[in-house]
Length: 196
Image (cartoon, rainbow, N blue to C red; front, side, top):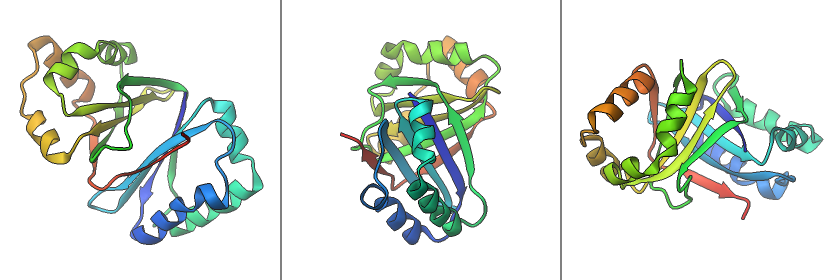
């Protein structure tokens, strides 16, 4: 899987959302597009986490003239040039994302040891037992160790309650080492697109 994260300030939220919702009909998804998770933070930051089967499929999509024209419209609606973060080092954990999620958190940070984080996500038992409100998500790691984790929750109230749970000591140490300097972005009204 390949993930492209689009991130930037946007105060023209209604217009951007409308543009995003017309992408499939006006531009077309192209081969290899799997879906996306989208939303705005309370302080007008936009996130789009777009999934493709491969880097090659994403590149082929980007090279289409109609995609280029559409991307220019998107950029024009942003408050400044958006940032793009690409990764084909992707881990899907628990049940992955869900179009039924009521709340999504985007977590961005830097990993000194990506293997440590991947190992933690690879064993779903403790996480599922401790945090049943987490449906699942994705972890995308860039070559320099920068990561974007997208976590889908059933709803925000359950997520906040779950945050109070005290993890086992070993897991807590791992989480603090991995996420201690990360930035959390709350998407309280996420929306989703899926190829299926």
